Length: 360
Image (cartoon, rainbow, N blue to C red):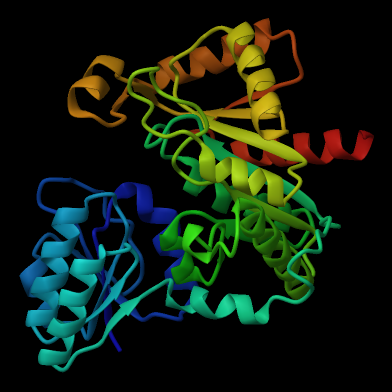
């Protein structure tokens, strides 16, 4: 079968490269939304186009990535199904939309697939008693963003960090909150929701703990690269939280995190603020910040308040380099600062993780 991917954006280049290399899906077309420009990644035998209608005619199925643009994705899925083309969906449709899409697919004799459907069978595969808490034997290195929808670079960081550990002879296993990662066969960070609770939130913690232990045993992992939920760790404002970090708190009760990398924008040039933030995160979640990967964004707080969600604005790369250099030279703690645009920034994080955990 020939597959197209929609939408293709620059931020998905590493993920799409991983999907293509695994050869589970025969990707022949990348569809870039007209309003959002993207560089042609130059994958062999893969065409990039801005015409959704034309692309759908030339493939057997379209993979819809989760780009946090629900209405646009929903419209395109309907158009795809009505064009008699199969749809593979990484977003999680609302109940009423899911029912409509399922019926529409049946009417047009095509397949509509949710990428996380296999999660429903995971509970039957988990070994151990539901009230038995396991301690993971392998190292757990977590990656997370400060605010909901903030940095947005943590997905690339997860893939690059896994490569860095693999290059050094370790066997990494990725457990990700990004639903798009399931296309690569990676595990979900939160495959069970609050609907899976039997009596209380404690039952979800036990369930997740047994699940993480199951992943570790099945994969024989040296290290788990854990992407925390993209709701963020802290509130954006007191009167406009934009995420409370509740899912991350649940996960932090279910698995011990040995090393943590924060993906952040260049909002701050004060090492003391990051030190205080690290202590706050330690009190709330049980782990400190070990490294910070800065990217060329900052949160526009006024615009975020106006539109009701976190809005990030790009800044020149020069500012990122200067900020990282300043923070590294003025720091008083052992937090490592890196620039996400540097070619080997994930190697720096990887080496810092190995050094810190080897000395413990």
